[in-house]
Each structure stands twice: as structure tokens, then as C-alpha cells.
Image (cartoon, rainbow, N blue to C red):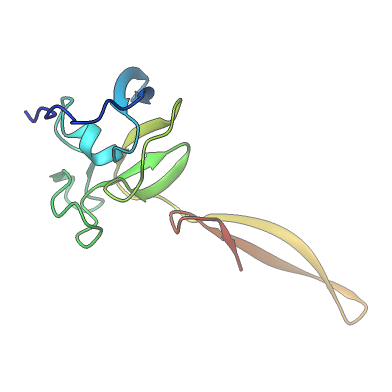
Length: 127
């Protein structure tokens, strides 16, 4: 298990919720850094084999640190800074893209279309 080294500067202590349990974190710390200090040492399991994964590169390259953050699946926890009251859930397998059906009027007739919302890009993108 990892432990946090003492900061030279005193930072404000925040509370986040990991799988429903309250956990202390320091202001400016990444979610992955917090998760590495609290058992179980994993953030997700893979969709195909179910193999357990944990943060690895800590710089956004490997995507092993994906978790559900405030209801948004597949967030890179190594790049996400904690905020007070944040809810983090370890991700179980594959996550679906959120697709909502909407009606679109085209040339005096109504056709069904789909609005796709992509999550985990730092902000919601609608296409």
C-alpha cells in the first residue's frame, strides 16, 4: 500500500467519497493518488477478461486509471484533481456511451435522430 509523504506546505483537507465511503484528500491531489492509498488497489476491471487494473503511468497515457467520477464513466483519475464532495466509483467493465433519442424536423417532415453525449473528455461534447 502507498502512503502520502508530508507536504512542506499545509494544504486544505478535503473529503471525497470512494465507493460510498468518505476518504480524506489534500487540495491539489489527483484522484489516482488518493485511490492508491486506499484498498483495494484498483480502479477498474477490463471489459473482456475482467482483469483488475490500477493507475500505472500517472500521466494520462496508459488509461489504466479509469473510474466513474461524479457519475461520468471512464474518467482518467491520474489527470483529475480532487474537489470537496466528489464521488468516485471503481469502474466495473465496459461503460456505454449515453445516447438519447430526439426528434429532428427536416424538410417539413419529422425524422428520428440521435443525440450522442461523449463523457470523459473533460467536458460534455454533444454531436
